[in-house]
Length: 166
Image (cartoon, rainbow, N blue to C red):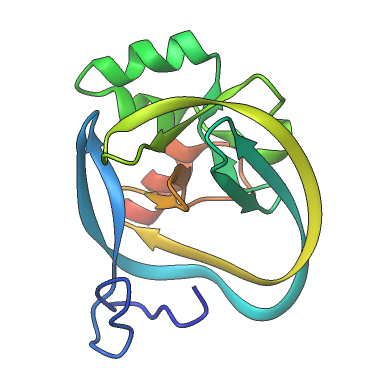
């Protein structure tokens, strides 16, 4: 993320000038979406992170006040099955530090399909570098886990509306 620039493209093409991040657009459809801006891009800032590990060993580290869609596994599975399910999950995002072992996250499996996975371990770490790229949908996949682009205010919808119309 420290090499990512607004408008860049591709996972390894940081110097090309256009960067797109992978996001889900339907239960089994992934697409690339352009990074429009950064809320945070502070490579030298040390911060506390919540580290969540899933049953397939996916790992995501976020600041405690970063928004993340997580919750009851069966409810999340049902949400993903309908056309607006991913957006519904994002609207229900909460602060990462509220996640508990046994809650579920939305992830991408090895075949590129969206799936629901249980959190099996939660840890904390102090790391250097805070990055928060912003996409039009307000979401992105981080290390195979669906995340909101937003933090600090516990409402994905309010922040998305303020960016869209602000």
